Figure 1 (cartoon, rainbow, N blue to C red):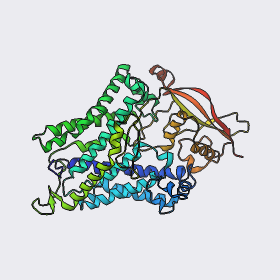
Figure 2: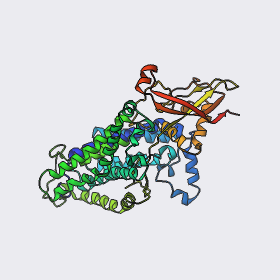
Figure 3: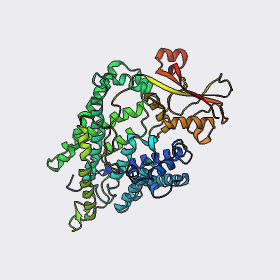
Figure 4: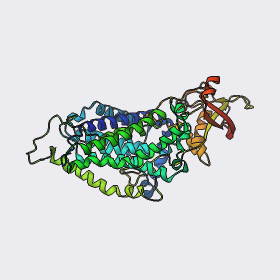
Length: 491
């Protein structure tokens, strides 16, 4: 590092800008495919109804995060236009075209992505209530100030990315230590691979590993999240200490974060959470001479500091000062007795608190939705979802970083004390054989025809042992519990 310029972090900037833009592309694509049936004009939780309710009183408007749809009336067509525009801008950034211009070029592009996606998240209600939504928003805001290829990245922005990784990892580690006993007695991962919201193709193999391996996983997790994050700031010592040691220490710490997140990618489907963490962790890896600026302004010019234009130093320094102010609640939260998980402390969702899986579910209960076409409700057929377990012979698929929002919320249903309004609306859409809703699931057992009845049945699922897999060819073993809702029919 060289004062205002992180001269050895050109490669890190390349990974950050292109990686974050790629995740925005996935996020806008997910919204393009799913927002309308979930939250559109005729969705399960219509966003126009929320906006109308918010608009009735000033104090309600302050409860809503900023959204373009508070100024422009929501319509499904405008939502589609916003998503398509977001995909185009993100794709251009992935290719790297704006990065070849002045620094305000990529800045405007990333700020457009940030504001555009915030406009969706703000009206997304429970379908957009995941921690990785605010993570992507914060990462996009910071990426706007990384600059362009003709100059080194600003030190202050690179350090702010380190602060983001620290909050991600250390916050998650503290949540676990303060959470369920299973994290302290090292048994959490004996259950997690099986009971996580959406298992992946390798989740069963991970679950069947020996108990000593799972205990080692927990120890490794605690080390990666409670010890390693402090070493992410080691490259700052290069401002006062000569030699490569500080950057090597930081790179090793970042590599540990990346490797642990890669294991989670292999064994689960956590949308873009793990992918975003890996991308952001690259901010700590400094490689001298790799990805360096192509053309650096003359350092003896009065409008240049450490190879950065003076106006850009002023802008990025202002961002740094802003973060000093807005980070205070997040810092207090990390060490608070009642630590908040995935919490935002300001309307712009900057300097948030992160964390996941403070407790681990020890038993997997699935809500299976069934329909019947006969008047007496004798024969029942199952609706198959794309990602969540259903057919016991079907191998779980890898969907991440794509986010299947309906499937994820289905996992939360057995954990609550009552069924949410969206689920009741979902059952009504199935009774109506609503085509956009049916497009969200994998198999409609009635091929577009209306069933007479629908109901929700709870099952206990567990991964099949190796012997059960050889004997019966099954991935899951399940046992029926009870009908938890219904039968319902349309009047």
